[in-house]
Image (cartoon, rainbow, N blue to C red; front, side, top):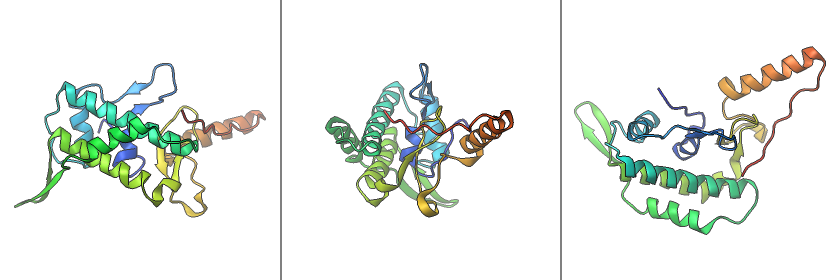
Length: 190
């Protein structure tokens, strides 16, 4: 797998395809049609690569950034960007991934536009419903992944314990060993 899925939600994991977005050089994970097709397959949005082209990558990045703008506005208690809302709604208005029955079982086949519509519809469900109150950004300063905090008491701090959580706990341990105060999570969105 070339992509990570710590959120358990396609729209939020899609936002995470631009890693460390506040760094001077963020890491783009959708840099080619092949990368986009791999994300669609690995995320479960489709079972096969829909045959993305360069313009599909451009559209995917436009959708991703619109979703992030709306999530960031929600996290910082700002008014939503109406242009970003229009972009998400425009993608969601198209037909989405179509499940098909085959002798092997259920198949998800889609064009790139249908796959992006499925992602946009997931974003609409989150941002337009009660799950919007569960949105959080990872507490590791270098990570900008957004997730839904469904933990008891809403105490989850990291996008994934296996990655960011372990890094933060190890850093806190090393700081304690040196006699320094532990690092505190930064939750700056923007």
